[in-house]
Length: 144
Image (cartoon, rainbow, N blue to C red; front, side):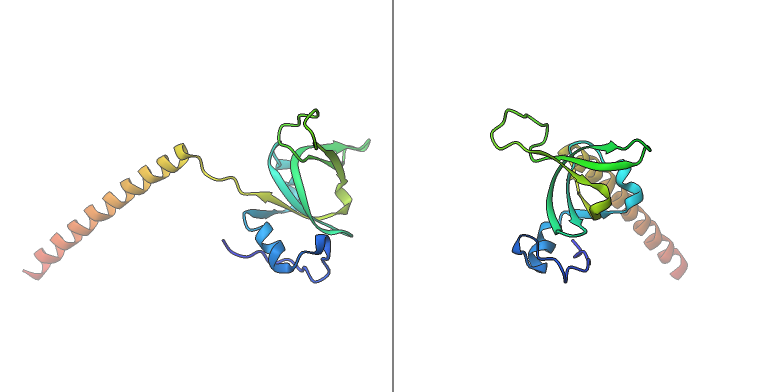
C-alpha cells in the first residue's frame, strides 16, 4: 500500500519514529473531516492530536454532541463491543476540536466478497479471450 504523507516532523508521541508511524497507519486511510460523520461503530481508528501528535486510537463508539448540535467529542473504547467488565477495558473521549487527522482502518474483504470479485474477474477474462479470438479471426480474413 502507498505510504501516507503527513508532516510528522513534530511528532514525538510514544517515542515512535516516522517509519514506525507509517507502519502503524499502513492499513488505514486518512478520512476527510467532512466524512467523519460516516464513521461506523466498531471501526478502528488512529488519529493525529493537535498537541500530542500520533495516537493509537481505538474502536469508534459514537460522537457526543454539544448543545448547539455540533460534534464535540469522539468516544472510543479499547475493546470492540465494549464489555466494561473485561479487565483492562477503557472507554474514553477526545475533543473533536483537538483532532487534526483521523485514519480509518481499511476493512479486509470477506471470503464471500473475494469469491464474488474472483467470479467477476474470471468472467471479464473470458470475454477478453473471446474478443482476442474474434480479432485474430478478423485479421486473418483481412490478410487473405
